[in-house]
Amino acid sequence: ANTLVAHLGETDTTRMEGTEQNINAALVIRHPNYNDKTQDNDIMLVKLAQPAKFNQYVAPIPLPSSCPAAGTWCLVSGWGNLLTHGVAYPDKLQCLREPIIANAQCKQAYPYYYSSNMVCAGFMQGGESTCQEASSGPDQIIQARVTKLQLQAWSANFASSQEDFPLPLCESPAGLAPTSDDASLSVSASQGDSGGPLECNGQLQGIVSWGYECAMKGHPSVYTKVCNYTPWIHQMMSSY
Image 1 (cartoon, rainbow, N blue to C red):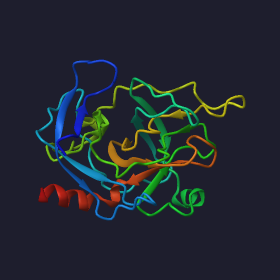
Image 2 (cartoon, rainbow, N blue to C red; image 1 turned 90 degrees about the vertical axis):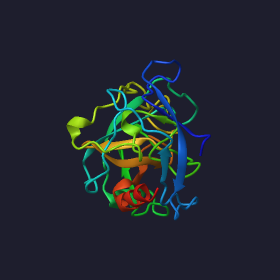
Image 3 (cartoon, rainbow, N blue to C red; image 1 turned 120 degrees about the horizontal axis):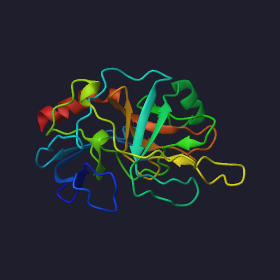
Image 4 (cartoon, rainbow, N blue to C red; image 1 turned 135 degrees about the horizontal axis):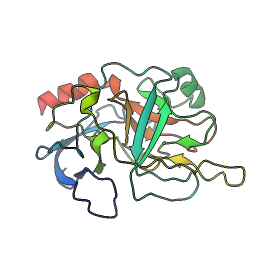
């Protein structure tokens, strides 16, 4: 795990902003029931080699106290591909607000792979998305680039309230919604950036996992349902 580095406080990947904390990973724990064919149990924990220093750029996010209800508006962030077809990765952190979608609709959209360990969010009519079309492995609470929304580790105490939880310094990828002339354009924060956080009411409710034809009609983004894993996360934290 010493080859994995968490970049905390990152916003612009093209330059040093003076807010970054680059910390090696000391331990990586993949969920024992991860299924690489269905992406079920798509979660991994990373323990930092040393504690992060909390400030206005790096802060913890609480684990969920309950599962999110359909219709709840959430915020997702990441450096994912802005195109459904083609490649256009942003330099600066992107954010998108989107609602939780009812499980029945998600199951209808993805009848073969969607499980009770997943939650989907987005817009069934298309146009905006955050999905990861081809996951390369278990997602992680700490990923290669970690911002305010993405810090969750043994080295930190969880924030106790939403007031303790600052929003990320990010841009909204507005103006890229698909049109009749170019269906390859989409509004996406995390396609190709698996592991990004879905924050709902100040709590980490989802981790970007997978999807199909991002931002296209009837294809919402699929996230790991973090509320199903809080006992396992606490168990791992206390054991290691």
